[in-house]
Length: 398
Image (cartoon, rainbow, N blue to C red; front, top):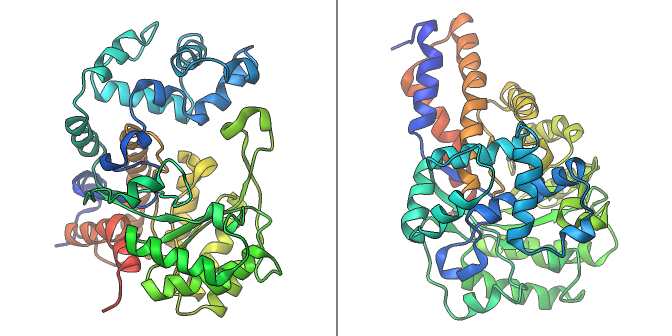
């Protein structure tokens, strides 16, 4: 039954709240991967987004800051960004939202109460509660087979967890040529690790200078090892294009920036490898329209997320409206990119809050133009955007 115009916004909010999302890209880890998984207040506060803000609002120098303990770093950031300044940026407000969701004082002078709360948590119960508060049923990890801390867990048979899906990360292989330039050797390595991890996709972060084809180790490995392995295991390759690493080396992880990429590289990949599937996120705002155009031309390309510097409501709104106008509901609106467990809470709260008026306006326009907006249709579309598109794109063919 068609909804009256005045009810559309409320129904959209209800269905967004009721739909368990799949978070298609995070840096979280399942419990069997030990202490690789980050959680708790000190990890939240020392997130590199907040470190970058610290050096704009404090006299402390990066060299001095990075010599401090994690606890001291968190205290420094809390004092500078939450006590001496109003926490109104997206990253600081996110911490406030997390504290509030657990009933903690968001205006405390120090982190004593928050530290006591997190120290008292049973991790498994805390994990379940966090996923529930975030409205997330499953997350995709970032798993590096060349990480000397992570690889032994997999080699010893890490226990799988249905809430955590592996993704085989290729950055060290493709960007650092860690295995040399022997495609046959790399392909065998990938086959071994695909069998071991059972990843839902392979993934690589590529600089804004990425081009394809190119006469380089990366170009050869992509064409002769990575993409054939993806075809063999029938999984997509996720391309995250646009970072400029350490433009300010003193800030370490917080010193990265973004640049506009030449997406003709993506065009060539889609043309030259039609049997491969590509999940794509681009870091430059200027590349977003091009990405939508290419998605209209290549069904083996799936745009996903508003990544990193684009994960601000004003920009998310612009990009999402553009995608709906050009692609309908055939994209993945967002991922969290969470590095700390509790970030799921505020990142997905923000997504629901930002997407609600966008979707409501979409259905209102449909109704005004003579179509029907129904609860069933809204539910179907939201489930498609935040679950079905990813699950269908990554599903292995029979």
